[in-house]
Amino acid sequence: MIEHLSLEMFQDDIEDFERSVIAMPDISTVCTASDWQIAAYERLSDHRESRIIRRDTTWMLFCIGPVNRYRRVLQPFEMSWAFGTPLVGEDIEACVQLSLEVLLQDRPSWEMAVFSGLPEDGALAIELLRTLGAHFHSESIAGSHCDQAFLHDGLDAWLERRSRNFRVSLRKSERAAQEQEIAFEWIDGVCDGAALLERIFQIERRSWKGESGKSIYRNLPYRRFYETLCTRMGKRGLLRAIFAQHEGKDIAYAFGGIVGSVYRGFQISYNDQFAALGLGNLLQWWQMQKLAEEGITLYDLGMEMAYKKRWADRLQRFQTLLFVRG
Image 1 (tube, rainbow, N blue to C red):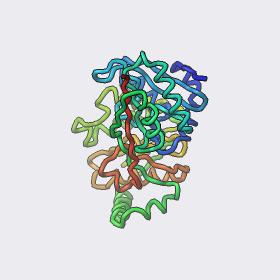
Image 2: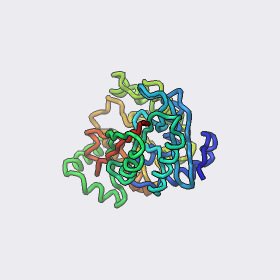
Image 3: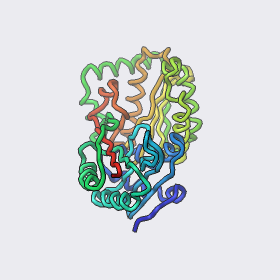
Image 4: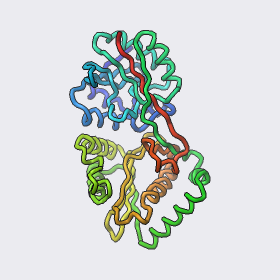
């Protein structure tokens, strides 16, 4: 039986939804899970109505609203980066069948349907194109690819996969930080997400991003997105953050969130006065040690960037499928 849920009803079923998210391989787990999706729905776009559909352990987390020239687009809650997938379930056949039924039944209510965050050339994307493509015009576009590091075989194994120059540079930064008496504070468990984010804002203002006006937090919708995200994840004990301190003052941060055994990094930055210490590398290294101790098996570094390649073991490629009503 197909259930149509309000956002309030969905909040009561989040644990069931998260289990389905965790069971899906190769997706952007944290960005598909409820906290990221709800924060995006509430903060990143107006004039959209939620369309949450469930059948057993298969879910469609969509909303409907305008996108470019189309006025009625069935779309993911989070369209800004399109990291997460709005179609969730371990059984691919059940996912595709539910999608087909919903799109055919609700055909008059939508003009285009968007399925983001699908592993490129994965079984789900292939079956959606084959099945839905028989009824609607289809198009595939590249998604936001993500760099990822494997921790399932331990931190020593991960370190062995790095270059000799990388390991030497890391040890050099560690020695420099010790000489400058840099301290590190790790935060996990239930916490005040809003207070944690305020500490981050204070550091960001003294970073090159803040001083050049390029900080993501200067964009009010994104700032509000992170406020909602951190508040929700902090209450659930899913936030992780590390702060570097000099003489008792915060000078650098990195933070992210976990779902299951996957950690997703959100943002990282530092006070430019301490750039020579290599704090970006040290923050990554310290938090990876903590994450490995916790049993995290995959570190999702987020959107593909050149500096992340040294840390990553693979590039997880995603695609977005568009279906247009004929």
